[in-house]
Length: 200
Image (cartoon, rainbow, N blue to C red; front, side):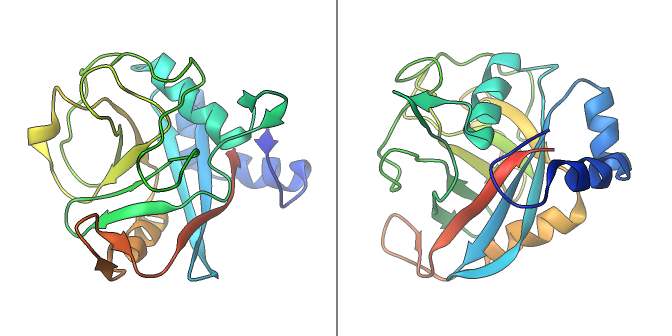
């Protein structure tokens, strides 16, 4: 069990063992991670995500370490904690994960500045899929997006490597989706932050 802050490990472990969706994923060998979200400083729920280690082990491990703080920049733990969702496009996707600049211009990974597209085996076949944001072929870093609909035109261009685990988590995703945005970059008018994150 890895978690940055919050409930003690025994309590979280017991909750995890009682949850069949989490246990099913873990039994498949796939990690389950979480984001606790605040919108405008108000706690707004938890997004739980299954990472498809069975299909995309390298990409899944990059994301997992960003969730747990195992990724170090120098000697300092680094990752998604306190980072924003900086781009929201209704009925398309929500994007976050820029741990360097917070605005979509930063690129860093556990493997260096960027790493190659692992594979395109999985498709953007519906809402709730986790996929890597990039600036072209083989430019994966820490940024990601969660789909809000089928987005087949992204197949073969972005690596799908996880999914939102349950309906309660998708409700939090839809809360983010429905925030008003501004400007050409579709930035949320209210700050959307990962207040806590970790691995279940």
